[in-house]
Each structure stands twice: as C-alpha cells, then as structure tokens.
Image 1 (cartoon, rainbow, N blue to C red):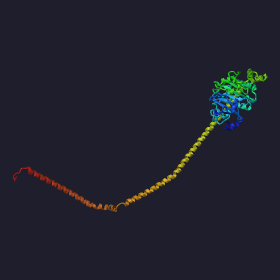
Image 2 (cartoon, rainbow, N blue to C red; image 1 turned 90 degrees about the vertical axis):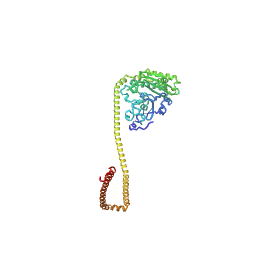
Image 3 (cartoon, rainbow, N blue to C red; image 1 turned 30 degrees about the vertical axis):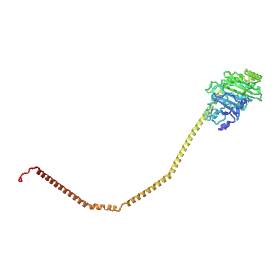
Image 4 (cartoon, helix red, strand yellow; image 1 turned 135 degrees about the vertical axis):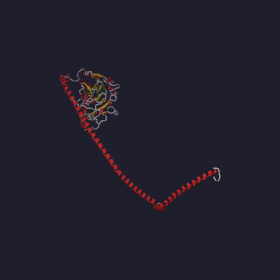
Length: 475
C-alpha cells in the first residue's frame, strides 16, 4: 500500500501529514477503507472511467474513503463514521500525487510545494491551492473535520476532500451538518451501533478558473447499522445557503447518477421504526428552523452574536491577504525548485555528454591501437615471406641462365668465334667475283648486241632475195 518515500523530506513529513492511496481497478471496493460502508459494500453506480477511488489514511491507518472525479476536479462523495469531534483544528492542506502521476513512487499525500518537479502533470487531474486563491471560493470539506477526532481531522485537510464553496455557504453547510449529526442523528443511533455517513456533491457546469467544478448541490446520507436501523438523506442547494431538505435515501439516489445505490440493503429503510424516524425528522426540522436541540438559547445567541460577525468582517481582508501571500510564496518555491531542477538537468546533461564523448574517444583510440598492434606481426610476416619468395626467384633465374648457357653447342660457339675472320678473308674473293660478274655482264651485252645485229642483217638479206627480181649477174 505505502512504499517508503524516496526523499528525506517525505520521510520527515510522514508522521505529520495525511496519507492516501489511489485504489487500483483490480482491488475490491476501497480496499482497507471498505470499513466505512455498511456491510463493507461501497455505493454502486459510479462507474465512469474518471471516477477514482481513494483510501484516505493518516499514520498508516485508514480514516475515510473518497470517490474523486478527475474530470470535475472535486470529490463526488466522502464516506466516514462519526467519531467524537476534537476541539482543536489545524489546517495542513495536501494533494494526492498518484492522481496526476500513477507511476510516481510517492505513495503518500504531501504539501504541493514539496513535490514540484517530482510529479508529472501536477494538477492535471486534481485541484491545487492556486485554483482557489483569489477565486472567491473556499475549500469546503465534504467530510467536515469538526465531525472527527484529532487524528481523523488531519486526514480531512486534503484537496481530494474539498469542493469550491462560498465562505457563507461553507460556514452554513458545516454548521448544519454538525448540528444534524450531533443533535438529530447520533442520539438515535446507540454507541454499540455504527453511524455511517456519506457526504457528497453534484458537479455543475460552473468552473473555478475554468478547471474546478462548483457543485450545484451538497448532500448527506446517513445510515444507522442496527437491528432496527434507519437511513436519512439531506440536500442543500448552492443557490440557497439556508435550505436544508430532508428526504428518504431512495429519493436522494434519484437526484444522483442513474443506477446509483448508496447503502447495501437500503440500511433498514424498508423496516425502520416509524417513531424513531419521526423523532429524527422533528429534530432536523428544529435545526432547520434555527432552534438548538439540547442546547440553550443563550448558546445559540452566542454562536451567532454580533461580535463574531464583526470579527469575521474584519478578519476577511487579512485572510485574503494571507492567501495571496501564501500563493506568491508557493509560486516562488515552485519557481525555485523548477529552476534548480532545470540547472541540475542541464549541468547533468552536459557532464553526461562529456563523459559519453570521452568514453567514445577512449574506445576508438584503444580500438585503433589494438588494430595496429594486431597488424604488426602480420605485416612483418608478409615482408619476410616476400623476401624469401624474391630470393627464390633470383636463384631460379640464375639456374635458368646457367642452364641456357650450358645448352649452347660447342661448334656453334667456334663458328661464332671464327665468323669475323672468315668474313674479312672473304672480301677479296667477293670483290673478284663481283668484277668477274660485271665483266661477264658487259661481255654478254656485247655478244647480245652483235647477235641482234647479225640477225637483222640476215633478215634484211633474206627479204631482198625474196622480193627483188633477179637481173644479170653484172647488175
């Protein structure tokens, strides 16, 4: 239910502040706070997804239960048992972190200023102190602190138990409820029995600062869980602070959401004592008419004396100024926390970025060094292999050249060596042969010319002998 607070501040406040828990959908009813309902059965019919069940606690003990509307930012009802009221009241207004941030580790109600920067979307689903400051409305308690003993009183001062009420309406509501409970209901429900109370509000379309719904109606349902039990409903309209209408719980249920059923088994409404019911209604009627039941007229006059009215008028401006001062202080604290958080975030981000860059550089350097160290043996081996292969190539070339030289014939070498000698000695013979050839050529030309001329001569003589007539021999 409640985890240990993360922060030292939360630990210090744990024993002083009201604690609460948002009840999950997988849990039955209001978990440990089911004790505040007759037969431990909560009201039925409140099934909207924005209806959040809260088990309000103080000092790790359940004090009362609340059904909260995150849409309207007000409680729809608070369920509690009547306990003897304490004389002293001390206001310590708190908020519920889990309503705005279900994943937050804070499992207790704390002051709004103590969770700035640690709760995501603070105020998205619930009302905050700033929503009431300067609005003309007070934080009216559905479960009035004046109907609770000391430990229970501390638990009632949470914004999840408050609705916007005008100062006069808040005063009349708490006054009327206290009188009805203490003077009309408690005397007709014995101490051995349990008086269960449901104080609720019906949201309207009117919004405080466009966010928190102003209720159009306040209501109270009472159930005395006894063999001859009884139940009663009361309604106060916002537009008439002096109104206080009594009605049966069944009639009250018709004014709420469709299908709503407040008490298990109607809490004896079907078989309740007629005489007891009339006595309760008579007491309520006397309270509505301004009379006190069991208290002297002097006490009534004292409560509504002119001195108290004057004191209220004088104190109102100072209260408003104090509210403004508190609001400014809260906003200043929020700003300081936000600024510190932003600075820490920026500085932390810069440091982390530097560490990350340094780490990347070191890793890259070590990686490069490792690659170089790994490649050195490989390169040395490759050079040695290349030198060895080159040496083998030289030996192969020398052997091949030697083999080629040894394969040349000895006669060829001798002829090659004698070639210059024979070439020089052959020059005179060649010249002689050339002269002989040239002389033979001229002789052949002369012989050919002589033969040609002889041929022409022979041909000419033959022709003459053939065609010229023969004459005398003298001719």
